[in-house]
Image (cartoon, rainbow, N blue to C red; front, side, top):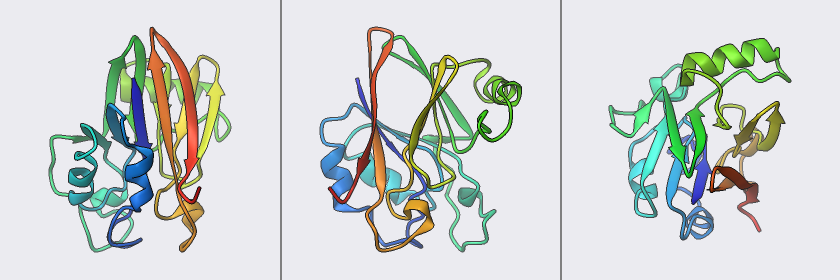
Length: 179
């Protein structure tokens, strides 16, 4: 199963529409996971033309970062999602403290609070900094931002592709949208 990961789109403040390259990169995926700060529901509708979509509620989606838009209620959006796909437990949340920022104990408590316990993969956003990092048995994937990478404008953003099958993560790859 191929899963498209995207986060921190900040539309329409960052730009009016998702970059066309997102649709090229996500062609043929089975599911889109948006890790929050969507801002407007039409972004989810556009992504749903590719594959089913779920999203985490970001701080900006609740209007907590002072912007003028607020995500309307949507069944696809939750504070956190827990899925078991191809035997792999995947948690989707906007932000979770990782051991490089705090401690393994805090990370484990956060996974328990959001997902009821440890997961194989955490998909998160918030920082706008893309990365794939392993903390113990958990792989943490941050696709960065498709529209405001590292909070900069007018440079290509990033998304990620997660591939899972037969109970294992086959790959987790960051994709530069400018390539």
